[in-house]
Length: 156
Image (cartoon, rainbow, N blue to C red; front, side, top):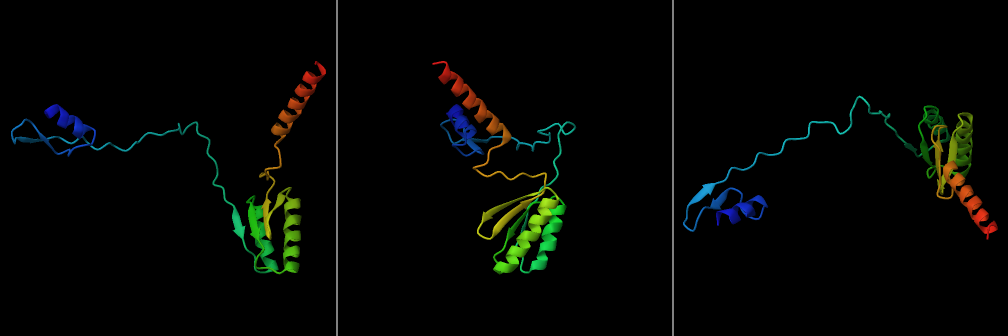
């Protein structure tokens, strides 16, 4: 009986503080195992680990055209910006997008229309890839596959 009760307690199916020793009513307290200590080691060797700067994407909802200056400032600081033009009229929206596009062009940045009246502007160090776009590696693989296919067809 003691063995079965101990096993039940070990696997969590019985009370972990009391176990019956025999068929009589004698009861003994079981020492509860010590709580596991928190992991104090490092998962990565910090002397070899590469540190990355914190990244952020600024989301702006300009209400006036002059907000374009703060958007341009974020771009010049190499921070990507999502611009939602829902608060601007059509004419101010066009002017603002033109200004920010000029800023992005000046810093070799990128622009993509994400949705209706929503644009993503990124600095030069951040590329924008959509589902339709392919990376140079993917394009190279595709070209290699075409070459292999046409070589196999010509050998037939």
